[in-house]
Length: 172
Image 1 (tube, rainbow, N blue to C red):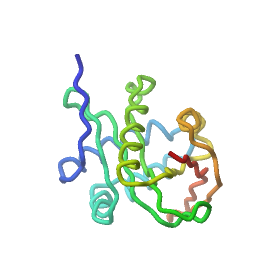
Image 2 (cartoon, rainbow, N blue to C red):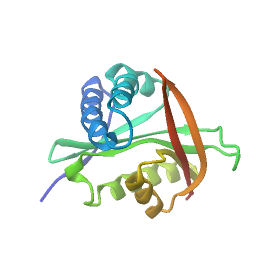
Image 3 (tube, rainbow, N blue to C red):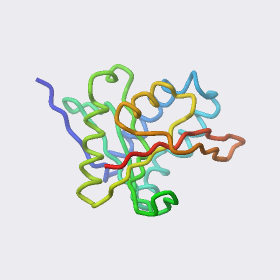
């Protein structure tokens, strides 16, 4: 029987593991969607140990999931209050990633359960996230979880790159 752990990433050791996972997963996940140069830029600027430290310092919570002690994925979220449609504080999910051989086994559902549990516990009724408009697999997973496209967003992330995302949301 396998042991599943949710690990709050509060140490440099945890954040290093997340950075290593990000490098592996992002290159695999996005290679058919965006250029290798953009993937490298995003990993180096948004998922490096230094960037992760800064995000945690500013309120983003990272969680790693491990099976039998081996890290296989991670997710991150933060509370935000900039919603113009509903006008209330919400939970913004900034990351949900799994290694390729772990996908399609129910782990994304387990991660969503943890995210919903956190939102309910903290009185948040809305969950939002951004997803690349060409990431058909992720979009279908999120829609299956009850999320709906509520907007489109083009974000200049520097380095000459733009993220072309859908904003998805779900009331819980």
